[in-house]
Amino acid sequence: MNSLYPDIHPFKQHQLPVDDIHTLYIEESGNAQGIPVLFIHGGPGGGTSSYQRSFFDPEKYRIILFDQRGCGQSTPHAELTGNTTPELINDIEKIRQYLQIDQWLLFGGSWGSTLSLLYAQAYPDCALGLILRGIFLCRDQDLHWFYQQGASAIFPDYWNEYRKVIPEHEQNNMLQAYYKRLTSDNEIARMSAAKAWSVWEGRCSTLDPNADVVDHFADPHVALAMARIEAHYFINKAFIEPDQIIRDADKIRHIPTTIVHGRYDMVCPIDQAFALYHALPLAELHIVRDAGHSAAEPGITDNLIKATKQFALSLA
Image (cartoon, rainbow, N blue to C red; front, side, top):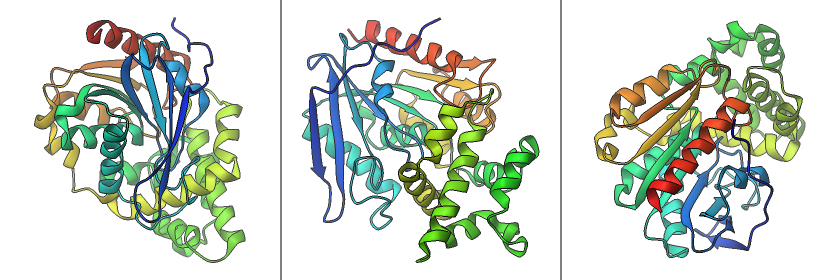
């Protein structure tokens, strides 16, 4: 079974202003002359972590990580103004031009898969390929499953902790109730809601309980950005049209694509991966039988690294 490559450090870091408000953190590691690959993190609002460089052979890849608007080391932190999906797509294209890259491989999980697909559909000539994990189509039913009714039946104990933050008379629309608190001026209510929102996601992300994953999601800096930005996007239906990703699949049908999805993914159930696979019949779909949603699960990690190895050979 494949495991992560050894830890490496960036050879270059950038701060890229993308408008009058937002400045993005970007880093490069691995081989400066290697195959360019862009790691697109989840959330939205999740930010990057150092271990994410280790999905790629540093001798073969020019590994590019960046923090999307409002999270990680990008500034301002947890900012919602000027933070929409079209602007994130434009940011990725600005990064490509700034780094003087003609084409690159896109690697994204969860919301990172969403954004990878949307960027590739907007700029199909710039994508060498797609490695996607935990497909998230951002349809109404996908949001309802995780934030209103669905996952709640699988994790009733965790759901009870998530629900307790919201008064009973508002629980018929949990997304709206959380959004109201996460955008309020009450700092205590805002942080309480942020932690509950983020921990709910962390607890549901792995097949087996993983304290390290939950602790990461519970970190106040991570939780505030993730909860505020996710709620902002999801209350606005991710700033995309209904079923836009599947509707526009023909635009990327020719792009080599590998899909990795956990059989027991409770954050983004596997029907989303099947819908994408049927829309992209030339793609590869790898179902990991003993995994949930997280890239940290051994079976998911193994399949993702197999994919990066295969692309390194085919793109060499």
